[in-house]
Length: 304
Image (cartoon, rainbow, N blue to C red; front, side, top):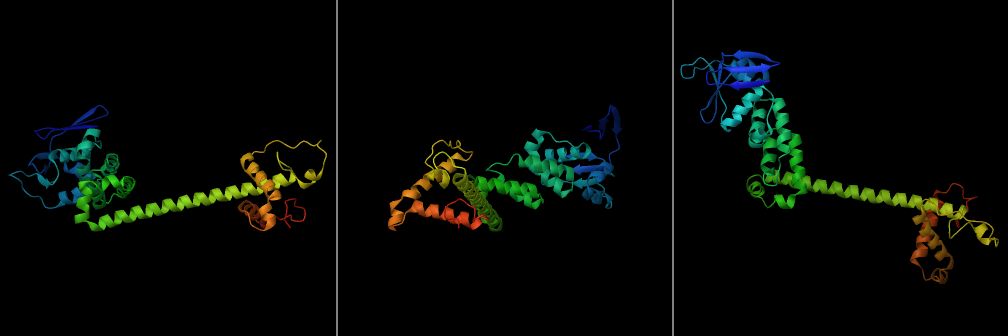
């Protein structure tokens, strides 16, 4: 669908190869540069509830004209033109979003044009930089755009050292300390969550390692694995038995085998001087005994 505004108030609307000429415009939109944009009250009212309320107010005569006058000030004239065109045909080009995205976001919020607001929230969010993130964050808060606020907060968090060197951040520190406090609180909360996740991952890894170690101890003491086997096999002088090959958890199993062999011959443990490796082995044996439910038949040393 394409709309073209002309000087004689003619608007050509093309859809599905059908052409309509809407010549009787009844609204004049006045911009900051005193530009006049003709429009149709029916179309404006169907898209924006705010414009509906303005149109339904008593009519004011403008320059001898009977048309309703709506002033949209404070934004560039071209941004207003793009805004009005969107009311007729809901589309915004990438170039227009690049130039007027922030202004269109403000207009879409003020006049409650939901579709344009969603489009601007996404478009402006894709163009956030270290230089403009503070300005966009302030606008997003004023325009009640939580998704854009969150994106700006995360951007500041990830690139805080760069953002705090910008003029926008320095202006924020001087004129909006409450927003600065909110940002710093967000960063602190994010870092705390990151630390909790890291600690949780470390704990999970530790639990997995201990679980694997318990399985390997039982495996070594019942089936045997490369270097160390069950006590019955070790006591048996016959060498006809062939031990199975390395297990799936070979690295853990191999480390435990070395620890068991050290535990069996360590002189420090025997002399009572203490040995870190032996203490570690005893801790593993205690952990096994605390969770073993077959202590009577268990072949792990010291289980009972």
